[in-house]
Amino acid sequence: MRIEFLKMQGLGNDFLVFDAPADDTHINSTRLRALADRHTGVGFDQALMLESPRDAASRVFYRIFNSDGTEVEQCGNGARCIAALLHARAPQLGRNLVMGSLGGTVHAHVREDGLVSVDMGVPNFDPRALPMAAAEDMGALTEALSYSLQVDGTDVEVGAVSMGNPHVVLRVSDVKTAPVERFGPSIEHHPRFPKRANVGFMQIVSRDHIRLRVYERGAGETLACGTGACAAVAVGRRQGLLNEDVRVDLPGGTAGVCWPATAKQLWLTGPATTVFTGSIDI
Image 1 (cartoon, one colour):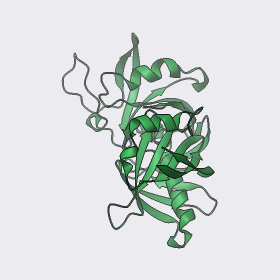
Image 2 (tube, helix red, strand yellow; image 1 turned 135 degrees about the horizontal axis):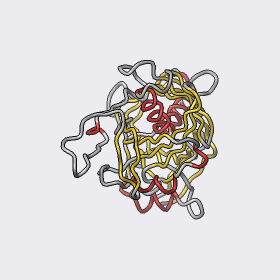
Image 3 (cartoon, rainbow, N blue to C red; image 1 turned 60 degrees about the horizontal axis):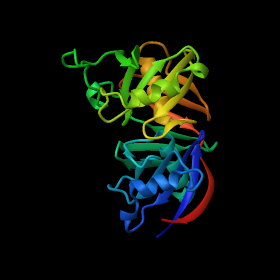
C-alpha cells in the first residue's frame, strides 16, 4: 500500500503527516518504527494520521504516534502543523479551526504572519490525571506544587501536570549542562508513572523567559515539544515564578506560551512549516 505524506516541522519537532488510508491495518507499530528511522525510512519525532471528524464542529480528528510506534494523546507542535495544513488546503474556511484528538478538542488560529496558535486547554495538576502513583511509603497522593522522586539514587524535586499527556518538569540552573540523557529515560520509565512521562528540564532566565529541553516519552530528546513548553510554563506559573506571557527557547527555536489565569486555557504559539511532500510504500 502506498501513502502520500507531508514532512512538516514546528521548531524542529518533525512530523510525518498523512491522511488515514481506507485500510489502516497496515499502520502498526512495526511499520511506524520503520518509517521513523532517519536512515532507512522517512524520519520523524511523531507521525500524525488525519481521520474524518468525529463531531460536526471539528474539521479533522488526528491521531499521534511516537517514533517508537506507541500512540499518545496530544502534541502541541503537531496540532499547530495540522492547523497550518488544513488552512492551506481550504483557506476559504477561515483561520479559526476546531480539531479533535485523543487528548480532547483543540481550537487553533492561523495568524496572518504565518504563526499558528493553539488552545491547549486548562492544565490539570491532579496527579491522577497523568497518572502519577504515590511512593510505596506514602498514603494516597494529593495534589502539590512539587513532588520528590528517587532517580538513580538521587532525590529530585519535580512539578507534574497533564497537558492531555503526562509531563514532569525539573528546574535546572543551565539547560546546557542539564542531565537530560541521565534523568530523562529514568523518569520517563519511573514506576510512579505507569503510562510513562515526558520530562522537561527548565531554566528560568526571567519571569518572562525560560530555556527548555524535553525528553519525550517514546521519542527521546527532541528539538522542541509543544506540550512540554506548555507544561513548563504551567508549573513555573503555578509555583509563582513566571508571568502570564513567557518566551520559551527550545533547541529548535522559540515558542510563546500565554496562560492568563489558572482557570483559563493556555495558548501555544509558534511556526509550522512544510518541509517536503512524498509517497512511500508500506
